[in-house]
Image 1 (spheres, one colour):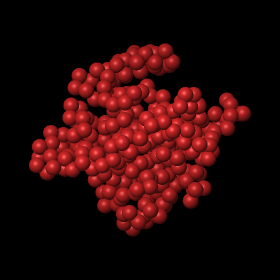
Image 2 (cartoon, rainbow, N blue to C red; image 1 turned 120 degrees about the horizontal axis):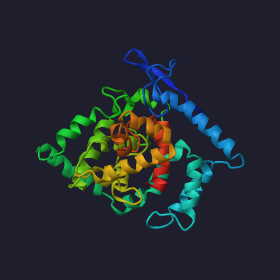
Image 3 (cartoon, rainbow, N blue to C red; image 1 turned 180 degrees about the horizontal axis):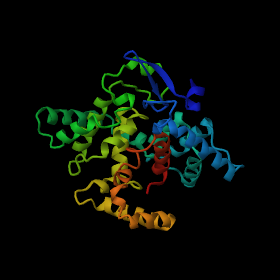
Image 4 (tube, helix red, strand yellow; image 1 turned 90 degrees about the vertical axis):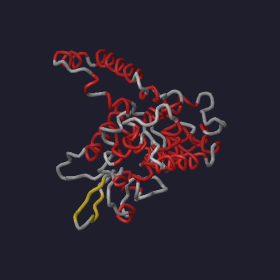
Length: 313
């Protein structure tokens, strides 16, 4: 099983009498022979990245699982969950070399201090969910209609969020799902989004948050996913909450910075897009508001988030 996951193989089993193929992250691959599905293509991209890393730094070896556990142990020693002096640069260095898939859940909770938050706020999530449920049942939640519309639009090709999916099939595959597997990811996502709309009443719910929370659910249990959403929305060095304010000031600032980076690093592309009248807001807004989780293969998304949680913006 470990070799299968590490190799990124596709997995086949019967679903309603027909063959289905899933990648290691739990997404359906419609045509494995053709390989046009983004998640199928992710593996070849990962191979190129590994070769490139080896060519550019042949003497540097990524940490193995034991090394990563030791590093994460050192980062978790402080009560706040922050790295001791000097550990942050070490963490940044090795994260850029690559994190084993099997340790992603633990790494994300340690890096973001979610493990410390959950210890300090034991039972709070359940209380928030109960309050959100009461509001939903009494039809007093102003965010309900938008949340309900977005639930079925969120990763419909992922096993957790498919309608009429079967737990047994997924448990027999080797997709990398959180340990507390639930076949009904939509219900878990619903609870998280309603709970956050209660937790942060000013922001409530905005489109884009559904993709971030759902992506967390593919790696983490429900409560950890909620507190990680809280962390990336409110804590430094992330502060993604600013992207979802009514005046969209954070989004506009982020788009401005991204446009200047494209102009500096890819001047020919920037000039071409300018000549064609294509503004960065026309194609990159959702990319940046979800840190690429809504549109790209999870092989890329997971690596982007590995580094974003260490380095922030």
